[in-house]
Image: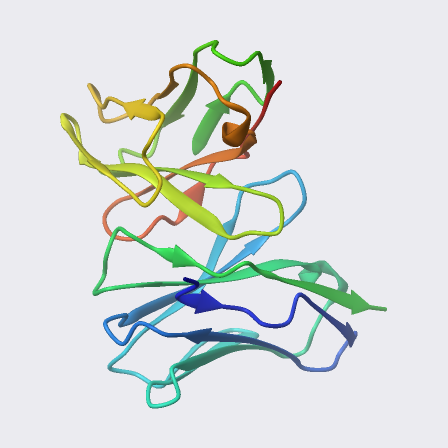
Length: 112
Length: 111
């Protein structure tokens, strides 16, 4: 039972354009959401988070949008850079919690 | 500032053997976590700790044990290794709440 789903295994984007990574969740108790980036042979790196009291959070080139009614969140990267090529994981938890549930990840390739 | 350090980076175990995956952090973080990542899957929480002397089970704790005797160290023990434990293991930490710093991982193969 996948509570957090990233339905696109991969995404390819041209440098300078927008990258949009999507994530759906099924558990209505989730109210804190995070995105992590992972390069090969490295551990994940925390990118950005959002709590359910907000519908948008921005940090530089990265913006996360949350649609609670649709149980959907997305990560926008503008403009995309070749160094953004990595695997992106979304994760969710109840409250500001310890027990994160991760999606399977989306491989982003930014072409120069 | 080393962050989260995991050793070893790679290990091959035979079925039935045991081993300890080491994890240490130098950021004085209270919370520490162990995750495993199987191919094509997201990370799954094995165990976590909110402070020295306190540990709790995550989503997939069977076949593993942990201890947290100091703030810095959070070793993961595998007893009686099985092929199903072949995975990449990540240790992570945070001051509080969800993990924000990960180690580079231990790739374990059980044959």
